[in-house]
Image 1 (cartoon, helix red, strand yellow):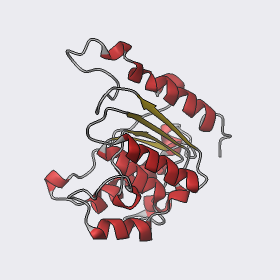
Image 2 (spheres, one colour; image 1 turned 60 degrees about the vertical axis):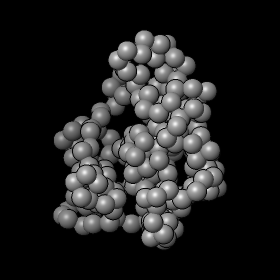
Image 3 (cartoon, one colour; image 1 turned 120 degrees about the vertical axis):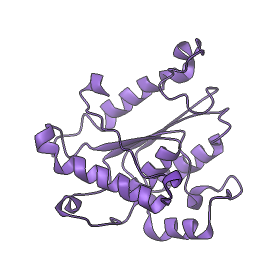
Image 4 (tube, helix red, strand yellow; image 1 turned 90 degrees about the horizontal axis):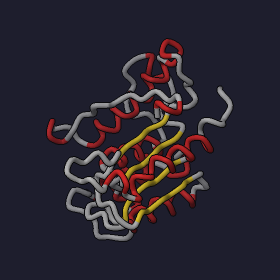
Length: 208
């Protein structure tokens, strides 16, 4: 990101281990987007090009935040800013129960979570998105990635998806120790796909 002139911020959201539920995590993501936008001038960044990059569960939270119909919590004046991102990069994201048609409901997917997705989130609101995954991912099925792509496509979203033949789960930036092949592995080229995506859908857009 930095090589493209993009600033990056790391969000430490509340986790189940801290006895917080998913709603609290989504609040954290929405708040992070708003904080960055509210400080855009002082940080010398473009408030109309604020995106989310999420991997695995972080990708799921990015989907929720991008598709939210409304803000979940109003704390102060910062929350007057828009909470939805201008783009998302989703690396092998877990999926909300409401758009998981290719497999049985997971144990942690309560009926409430599916109903909540249907009533509070709208896939047509999601901004340009890049989906990256591997066909041999044992944690997130490639069919779920196809389901996500289809859900966004129905909403006429600008969505790009790349599923690599192998790479497993959590390949991220390919810095695994003891895995000498990873830097030369095909899946490691996803960053070039991300660069092209950002140049096409984000960086070429006029400043607002």
